[in-house]
Image (cartoon, rainbow, N blue to C red; front, side):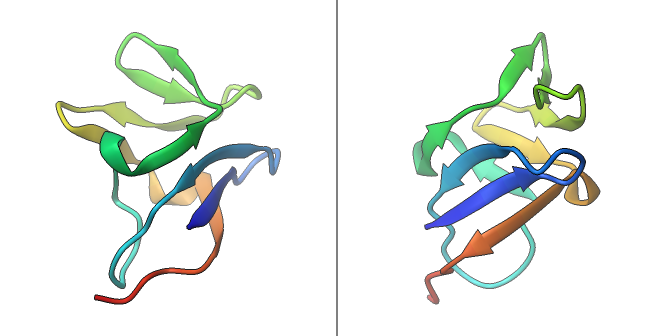
Length: 76
């Protein structure tokens, strides 16, 4: 389980169950544990107004430079 935070204001955005190595490019809806983001049409934003990503059919397509994360990643 990892905690994803906003790179601008450091507020907690979501808890996510990450499996495998690599960057977080997509957050699948079925792996999101807690979600604290705001949704505006097709965009996912933080409370400070920072654009986090866009909504796709199965998840959220993340902008890598707008988030930071910490926690344990489960290896495959």
